[in-house]
Structures are given as structure tokens and as C-alpha cells.
Image (cartoon, rainbow, N blue to C red; front, side, top):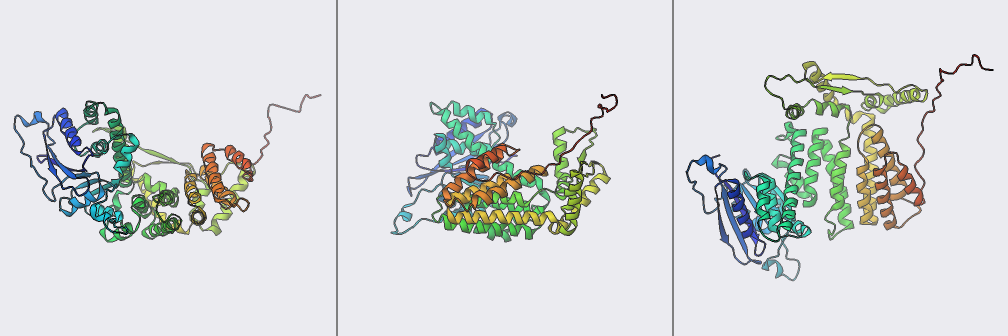
Length: 531
């Protein structure tokens, strides 16, 4: 790159914006890159606001061969690469000045608010709507990351400037190594330990957000441009969601759009809206910041995108998967790479795509085989996904996802999801904490095969005997009981801890699962020669 990277930092008085710009300049010098920093004092609309403009040329000093780059003293509207702000309204103010471009600028803003004088003057509630400000940030930025920097800094015992430095470093915007940032903080004085903790927290938060987005791109890179999530025509449903839920709901919608169809993803939003409405009635002041809705956005999307043979075939036959394998094995020019995938689908996997009328007889037949001492029927397969024939076989199986809504497992999963969703809404009507604990029970639904079945049975038992207990009517008791039972179920795969926990609360343990008894003749014993 021959053009500098431009960064605008916005901070209120006393938040350490000047210190942050000095840290960046020291880090640039330590890394060997030319840089320039200027400050623009602001008016005292709250405690005073100051912006700091920094430009860094991503070419090492050694490569310039004595040449000196020319930097700008002020940001150019529409030509800003990144904006980092410690306050939400200050971020919106910079956007209103035209400095941010939706095609270029990455915005990292704190959701914290410092009320202006005009907001304090009305006798009623004169605060500006934070949801509208967050929507503005998302609309006019190429990439938006909004959360409470101040709360994170307070938790780490440091100033918000340390968190903002971690955000800049974690974003990968500047060509500086993390060790150079940390070395700058270590030389900053007696509070360096706390600053390093705040730096690490901000760095990890941005890295995790980018990892989630990379996972979404890896799962369905082929629909990013055509997905309703990526289209500006479908931003209405995103803006209708609370800001705290929007990110997870968007990821969930993308996952389900890729998994089945747009109609299926719309069904996910409809279910999520039921929870949001129930939580708003249970917590009208939003003191809990939509925690129940956030958990439901996460676990509902994962459950609705349950694994089956169609999904496995789809993921294993994607170009992104082959590219990932090539990176992992470090394939070099001239190397030959063969990839073999092993499958062993049985009756449950095949019957999942069949209607219930056809699937039930097959499942009963397979169960009779197991009871009689025979192994369950399965079809071992070894498919070379590096070959044309192997890839065509997987793509053919992946094309059967249109059969999924007609299959027996699909109807079973939807019925169980509806039961859980109803339990969450009913719990919110009685007590917010009860609805929250029931929502967290979505963690029990994981894996596939026998692991998935155990989680399903555990969830249904908790919903029936604890969440909706006819004996214990106290919502607080049921909330604690659901939490304890859930944690016990997650700690012990066999369910022994869960059964003990249920008995200690005066609740019936889970019914004993049927296990066939097999008698095997010992061939080494013979009746011959016995007295």
C-alpha cells in the first residue's frame, strides 16, 4: 500500500484519549513504521470531547530508502479507514459530519452514554434512543462493533483508553505486532498491569467477533451476497430487534437460511419474537438487557439447524472445507492430497428423511434386532472426497435437503422445540429468572446419535418435572431447581448426578432406559467329563 491507514479516535474529557494516541505513536516507532498524530479539541458539550487523528503508512521505514511520507493533518470525509469512539452519541456525531463511509470505514464504538445538557433539561425522559444510534452506526459503516467499553475497563480495573488500544490491536487495522503494543504498555508506568488486562480484554473481544464472522463466511460463503441478511432491503427486521439481540439473531438467521431456506429462517425470527415480547413484559425496564432473548437467539438457531446426513454431506463437500484442509496440511506445489471421509449411517439416519408412516416400521425393526442380540444395521462407507465420483456422491446427498421438512425427525425436532419455547415464555410470565434458566437448558441439546437422545430426554424431564412442577408452585424454587438439574446433566453423561439431584429435590428420577440382556455361551466349558 502506498496510501496511509487513517484512524480517528473520539474520547470525552478525562478518558485518556491523548494517552491512547501517544501509545499508538510509540508502538509505531517501536514497530518501525512512519506515523503522525494530531489532536482536534472539541466543545464542552458534556465533559469536553477531543478527537485524535492518526495516519500510519504500512511500509517499514527501512523500505522507504530515506524518503519521507506526507501525512494529512485532518481526516478527509469518506476516506476514513477506522473510527474508534468511547461514547455512542459521539460516534453518531462523527457519522453526521460525513467522516464515515459505509464502503470503507470500520467502526468500533462503546455503547456507553454520557448525557448531554439538552438531554438533561426536559422534565421527562429526554434521552436520545440508543437503539436508533446503534442502528445508525450499523447503517453507515462497513463493519460495526458496539459494546460497553467502559464496563469492560471497570471490570479490569483500568481506564477505557487501554480497552480501546486492545480493540485497535485486535482489529488488525495497523501493521503492528501484539508484542509491540504490550511492550508500549509495560513502559507506560505504575498502572501498566491493569492497562495490560484492559488491553487483553478488548483484543479478545474483537478477535472473537471476527472469528464468529469468519466461521459464518466459511460455512456459507456462497450465499453472502444473495442472503437476505446481506441485502439492504431486509434490514428492517434487524432494526426491529433490540440491539443486544441483533448480532446473534443475524448469525442465527444466516445459519438457518443456509441450512434450509428463507422461510425456515423467517420461522426462526417468528419464534424469537415470541421470546422478546415475553421478556419485555417480564422486564419492562430492560434491567437484564434481554439476556433471555440473547440465549434463545443462540440455542434456538443451533437446535433448529440439527445435524443429519444431508447437513454432513453438504459441509464436507464445500470448497471452503477443501481450502481449510489444504491450509492445515500445508500443501506445497507438486504434493498430492487425498482425503477420505468415513461414514456409517444406520436406520435412524436414513429414516430421518422418511415420513413417519415409513420411518416407524424401520425403527421398530432395528430395535427388535438390538433386543434379539444383533447389532444395529449400518452401512459403512469410505468416500474419497478428492475424487470426482466421491464429490458428486456427497453433492447428490446434500441436494436432498428439500426432503428434510417431510421427514420424521424434522417433525420430532419441531415439536420438541415448540415445547421448550412454550416453557421459556411461560416461565417468563411467572418470573424472569425462571425463563432465563429454562432458556439456558438449550445447552443440553448437543451432539448427535445417543448423545443427542440423552440430552433430549434430560431436557424433557426437566421441563416436565421442574419447570412446570405441579407440586412446587414457587417460581424462585423452580428457577434454582432447573439450574441445578441442568448443571448436573452437563457434568455427567451417564445421568447419575442428575438422578441424584432430582431425588434430593423430591422429584422422580428419570425412567430407566431399556437395555437388552444378552446371554453368551462360554465355549470353553463343556458338559463332557463332568461328574
